[in-house]
Length: 439
Image 1 (cartoon, one colour):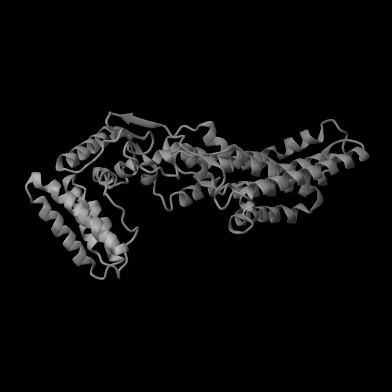
Image 2 (cartoon, one colour):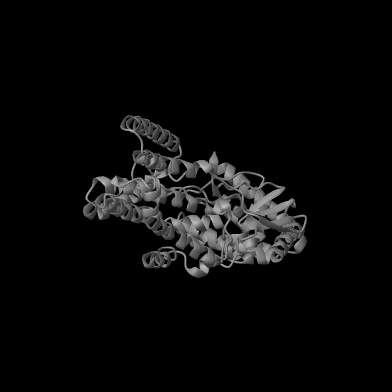
């Protein structure tokens, strides 16, 4: 348990400090999965090694040859219970610590990966006990623990891909709002559980002919189940087991637009402020002359999981929790998201600009965007983004950026009723230069 506690704080907070973890976003299935990632292999290895030792002790003491006052399954269960509890503690302790740390209430879906691990701990206990019946425990107990540990950990680094999906340490990570589909957890459970069930059949107290027939059937059935599991998992790809998304609850407020954020995304306490910033930004752009269609809803892209949805005129998807949360840029980030979604051009532009091509369209395009950013006070994040883009492409990046800033600031000095017309002319120039560049 000391090793588990030490590794919990060392591994789980090596990249994500405590302050960043509790700042959100917080999603119970994701947190449970992260806390178990480092301990699946350790739990299986410890359980197998201990049960090899206990199985060898049963053989040494001649328990199987004693008068059958209790069934072999009952004797095995009583003997292996402490080792199984040890394996369960290895898995349960980091989960409990993580839930206490994040103050999350677990759901049945969140605990599903833990239940998978607990089931496989029992399976490895049965396998270990059987192994202890046929091998010298002084050697096989520590050796089996090491082999099981490396068997589980190394499957995530080798091909074929199905090995990592049947190992019992799920290869698929969860994003916010996601949870495993039943098949993702059922496949590894059946794969190892089939082996354990075939092994347990050897303990049936029956006549020799019946035992041999039952063992043969159990072996064939286990092989069939394992092949089916491997075939199913072979089509999943790397880190791509079946998951379902969109399960995280949201909080909404207002209308025209109605703004929704993730209930545990880290920005739920600032929902009213986020709604105010979005509404003011849209109003400011419209009053300045930008053709902005007011969306019905502005939703937190965190609610969609890993498969992000594209914004439309009536429905926007912005990273509101990321922007307005404790680890984000704040309300300037919210305004920046509005800028990139609201300001549309009547043409399309190259996905990237090359250093040997004319940059006239870039100057006009970015000057128009920077002017709009100045209108809603989102110029700092916009300039930071474009500065990075320029630096990796243009040899004269500073000159290009200076020209963009000069045009945008000059436009802001124009009378208010002329700025909108300038913006539309700048858009048209950008489109004309972009068409000339692509010819």
